[in-house]
Amino acid sequence: MEGASEAVNGVIETKPPTGWRPDAVGVFFTALLALWAVLVALHMKDGNLRLWQVFAAAVFFEGVNKMIEVYLRWRPDITRGLTPAVAADFLNTSVSLVHSSLISLSVIVLIVKEAKISGLSNMLTHDVLYSRTWPGAYSALAISCGYFAYDQLDMIRKHLYSPKAPHLLVHHAVLLTCFTPALERDSCINYLILTLLCEVHSIFLHLRKVRKLASTTKAKGTWGNLVTWALNWIAFFSTRIFVHFWITAKLLWDASKFPSGFEWPLALTGMVGLNVLNVLLGQGLYKALRRERRRQD
Image 1 (cartoon, helix red, strand yellow):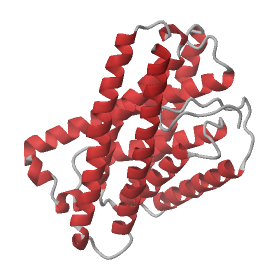
Image 2 (tube, one colour; image 1 turned 30 degrees about the horizontal axis):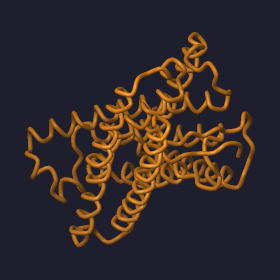
Image 3 (tube, helix red, strand yellow; image 1 turned 45 degrees about the vertical axis):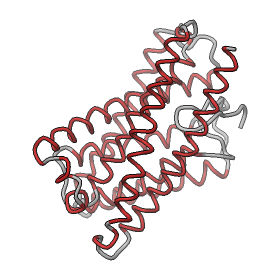
C-alpha cells in the first residue's frame, strides 16, 4: 500500500493506490463479506423477509456515494489538490458522515421516546434489552448493518485500509457478525442499539476528517479546531467509552440470564473487541491532537 495512516475510524489519513491491487487482507475480507451476503440471502429465502432492509440500506448508501460523487464533480474546488486516491477517501468519509448523522438521530429519538414511556430504569433491564425490541429499533439496526456491509465493500475495492493494520475492516466484520444473528433471531436488538450511540462520536471523527481534506476549509482558524476537538473528546468518553464499558459490564452481570447457546459468548466477544478498538482509537486521537498542536506551535 502506498502512503501511510494516522489512526483508525475517521482519523486515518489513508493515501490508497489509484487502482485496486489484491492482497491477502483484501481477499480474506472480500470472502467474508461474500459469505455474509449468502447467509443473509438464505435467511430471507427461509422466510425472514424483514432482512430485506439490510440489502436496501446497502443499496441506499451506495446511492448516496454516487450522489456525492456527482456533486463533487460539479464542485471541483472542494477536492482540489487531492490525489484521486485521497479524493476517494474523502468521498467514503462523506458517506460515513451521512450514516452517523442519520443513525445518531434515529437512535437518540427512539431511546428518548421509550424512556418517556417506560422509564429509563425499566427499559434497561435484561429482559427488555434481550427479548424485546423498542419501536423502530429493528429498522435502525438493519440500516446500520447494511451500511457496514456497503462500507466494507467500498473500502476493499478502493483499498482504503492498511494491510498491516486493517482496523476498520476488523471493526466492520465484528459488527456484521454481531448484528446479523440478532436481526435473524430478533434478540439482543436493544443491546445493539445502545452500542450505536457511539455514532454520535463518529460524527465528529468524520467531520474532522472531511474538514481536514476539503480544500475549502483549510484556511479555517484555530477556534473551529478547538471546538471540534472539545466535542470530539466529550463524545468519545460519553458515547463510546462509557456506553461500551457499561454494556460489557451489563453482559457480565446478567450472564446467567442468557439462554445456553452462542449469543452470550458472541455478544461478550464482540464488546471486548469493540473496547479494544476504542482504546486504539483513543490513542490515535491523542497522537493526532499532539501533531496538530506541534504544527500550531
